[in-house]
Length: 162
Length: 183
Image 1 (cartoon, rainbow over the protein chains, first blue to last red):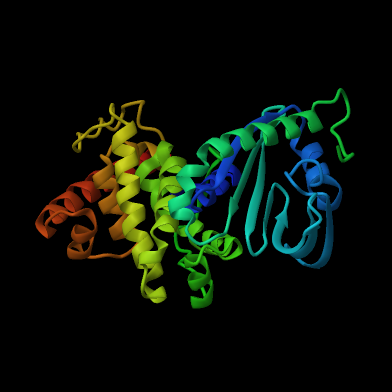
Image 2: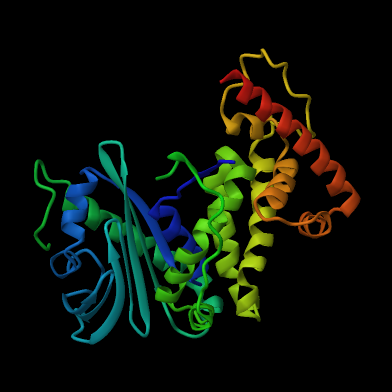
């Protein structure tokens, strides 16, 4: 007997993670570029993340084993932190001791749908989370604008850090 | 992909999730949460699709959210998939009932064999059952549960499940046989 079954896309998976992480910020937007072009840019973390992810000045991938990797991220404040991550087409998760973020993209017609999530890993986020809603809303708008700007170039899907 | 319906064998069982992964996920470790999602999503999809049908992506998403949010209450890692199954069936029925107000609340009579609406698609057959009947059928035929276990999961007495199961399986068999005869 064959029963019906289907897939869920990576944006739904990221929504699930965002809903499960107390105080997480989650936004979605449409990018005016094809999935392959978008991922060609985003998949190159060292070049893509600075300028897109808030407070990331540089990224250096130090280890990679299949989909898993470790990277050293330096922030604009000068602080450095090691991040563990998962990277595969359309899906990137990264976390340090105190911060986590994720990116999911999926084809959507001629364009691409993007989901972005970020959150803190402090104790007490379940209580503090609601207080972060206004800041998250603002941060979400900033992130969406950055991603759209990166890919909203005529015939040029980006590739250069802002 | 979302809405990319495809037939898939229903025999694939749950995979083993290391206890350490579950413990780390309970502490909010993102990578462990990812690993847990990877492990349970195929199982959740397998349960949600036959019950929630066109609403299955929503049902799957809602199930996974409930699972991750309540993960801290799971004391015994070995009970993971049984616990997930309860949540998946409840969420699939809830989502299907909520959105498909035009669907039959109770089992309806299947159309005559020459009804053109009856196509050679198992989805159509499932579509003719209420979400609860689909849940009973799924629990019995995919999960191998007996009436008592299915009743506990659906929150109804075993006798009710037995009658639902009888009617669901009868209708299902008739419809399936009818479709098979048309091929």
